[in-house]
Length: 82
Image (cartoon, rainbow, N blue to C red; front, side, top):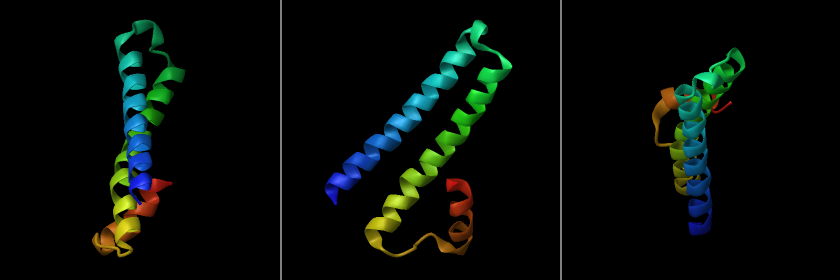
């Protein structure tokens, strides 16, 4: 289980870091600010949200084998993770 935690943490960290770098590079360089790249920035923002939500809730529920986050998150998490 510890290998799963390390690999999962690495994937989440790289996902957040990579998407943050995409956002920063597009925002810093005026030549990259096109409609196409703004769409990519929007996708990066949503991917950061998915990484944060999936990176915390999924491993906790996988390790504990019990849903501890309440009924509201039980219905919202699948919508966010899609």
